[in-house]
Image (cartoon, rainbow, N blue to C red; front, top):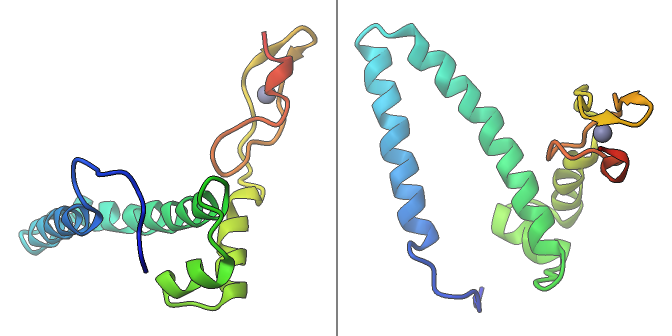
Length: 123
Ligand SMILES: [Zn+2]
């Protein structure tokens, strides 16, 4: 895939290598008997799942506007799979907004990014 993104301080493969090193460090800690390392690895699953969803959604939006087919190809999944993955962000996370409005606590459901759909009413 030809990329036209601006030059970054670090390229994605370098960041992936750093994440791999950090993940291996958690495995080494678990091997040393650190049980917290295991729960940290489990939390990483959700972080990566959410990150893939957000990244797929961002690449589909302007100015990139990549097709779901192209995004799916990068993820090694189908076009439909990519679309479903990106829409994960819009699913109910069960979290509620705690901002204040003129009528009291907002309490609206937050999206996967932690954004409130009623943010305009916040004071
Ligand atoms: Zn709100």
